[in-house]
Length: 251
Ligand SMILES: NC(=O)c1ccc[n+]([C@@H]2O[C@H](COP(=O)([O-])OP(=O)(O)OC[C@H]3O[C@@H](n4cnc5c(N)ncnc54)[C@H](O)[C@@H]3O)[C@@H](O)[C@H]2O)c1
Ligand SMILES: O=C(O)C1=N[C@H](C(=O)O)CCC1
Image (cartoon, rainbow, N blue to C red; front, top):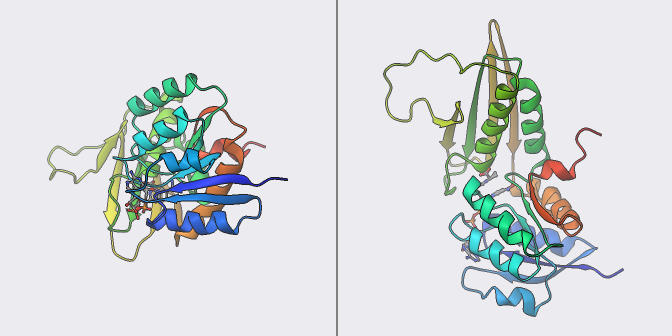
């Protein structure tokens, strides 16, 4: 059986270099290109890449994924910065190239995906919910894409259950003290040397607290998810947001 031809964009970064190693080590995949910031995207088509793994920067990702889509290269995207507006534009681009698939995964860590899944299940049972994400100080965006998505998932579940806004008596606060407001769910971001990627989801009600915590101790933790995305995206045309769609979580 022929190997799937894979490229990595952002190949010299923290995640990209790990993805290069993971693709090279996979027997069913062939690394055909490893692109850095100054390398031309045309290399993807010249080398016949079937799937591109995109791990760059929120300012670069839209143009890179757009190039892939226009050229029929499937994309597995870990880079953050996907607003509703950006997702809408990407859906339109994909409609013009049926057969091409893009996976946008806010987090490739299986435990992080499960955290979001469990948070959705728990949300309707608690009056209060807050998210704390903790990352290395080299991270460009805050709050993390994972924390933003987690808060959105909780907010969706609260709305579906008809829950009112969360109780909060704050009338005076320093700017930022109550975190970022993501659809009514406070999200707090910590940046600390020594951390990789961590998140706590706190649920509270009268007399009880539920804490769901996930820790990525190294970037190798993201690689099984990256490889799963690469193998599945080629058979999944259109836009898929979230690795959970490839995990059969309700099965
Ligand atoms: N989805 C996940 O599981 C996951 C996990 C970790 C990080 N991330 C995200 O992945 C992205 C990268 O994270 P990182 O820690 O590897 O960052 P990093 O800064 O270590 O690496 C990014 C690399 O991309 C390169 N780059 C920037 N623009 C480029 C372009 N136009 N073309 C090619 N290369 C370009 C940079 O030069 C750098 O080498 C961030 O958005 C981060 O939040 C996602
Ligand atoms: O290290 C990062 O940067 C990470 N980014 C993603 C996010 O913003 O959620 C995933 C976790 C690591």
